Length: 309
Image (spheres, rainbow, N blue to C red):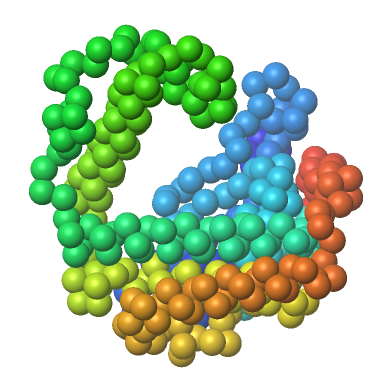
């Protein structure tokens, strides 16, 4: 075998969730086992192969590693509707049969954390929509001279000590501490300005239209609620439900059914539900890494021995 062996591939994304629109992309994820040289040679092979942004294959070791870490995207691929499976070899079936081993209380932080990162993005974009910055921050805005009076290396060392809580041990003047704080706030303002400019430059026209119409990105909101709902379901033992039974509710959110304030309230309620579910969940705190390692060995061995029919 000279080329990777595709052992599993499935439809993913909005069409797998049942949340597609007529113009939605067809998103595919898959798992491959490479030729023997990937595992026995010194060069190795790629961790993933991107045929396009919407069509990605993961080398089996990376897939298992990320799924064991409760990465939402990778876990979801194991629980898509069988009608959405495009390739399932013997090794792929072995992987699917073992999918329960990947579930653990880690989903509290992976699904919940990813969803809350979406919420942070929504909040940031809404702030930019309602009160966009008009000009880049200047040093004068923060009471700073045109040029830094403290050399960059010394400033970096002082900031590192501050972050570690060791700055109080230094014999430095209050003026220096004040200057350090102003430099920090100026640096953060410059970073936010850069993020704002990047957002303006690369805004998706469809997302921009949603934000203009509803005051926030309702597609992000839909996936935020979806992820928080799924995290709670997994922790409560209801399984990882990819094709959403709450499709109508989620599509309603996508169409602006929730005000911004109602979205925040909904997200906070679902986040609390995840925390509560994690406290009583029957799932293990962590997956059995030894069992998953053995599974990975089995999958590679099946392919290299020619048993993956």
